[in-house]
Length: 165
Image (cartoon, rainbow, N blue to C red; front, top):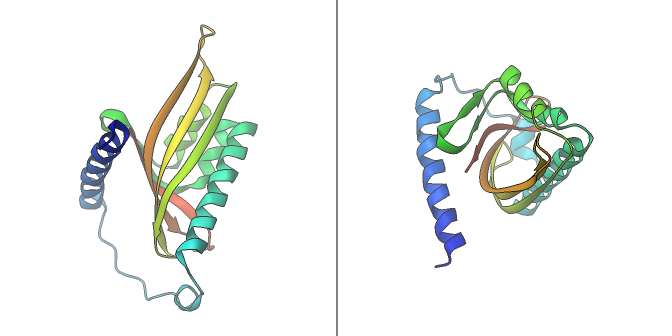
């Protein structure tokens, strides 16, 4: 097994452990009746993958304009969980998180795997962010990530959980 495969498996194990904690902390809601529109829509894995890939492309384009414009891709109650379980919770905190990224910077997202359903999807990917620090040094941060997307009432997918290492 390659070093990258071992690292990815370790990251996924940590992501699953974090998901268990998030699920435990999430209040239980009364289940809504099934949405007939979602149930009757034609759906395939390739359709979902294409939709998530298009969202990734839109996120990178938004980032290239202004990093703060990435925040609307997240649901109002979303969480971002980074290294050492650093957690950013909710719309205002996520807005600040993305607004604090310094420009100039370049960002790429690689879609490795997408699965799930039309209502909820998961994405495994690789993120690469190159930026210049306040002292003028340029550096690149590459990480594996797992994102959970949830379809909103307006039909759009929004990120509800973003885990990265």
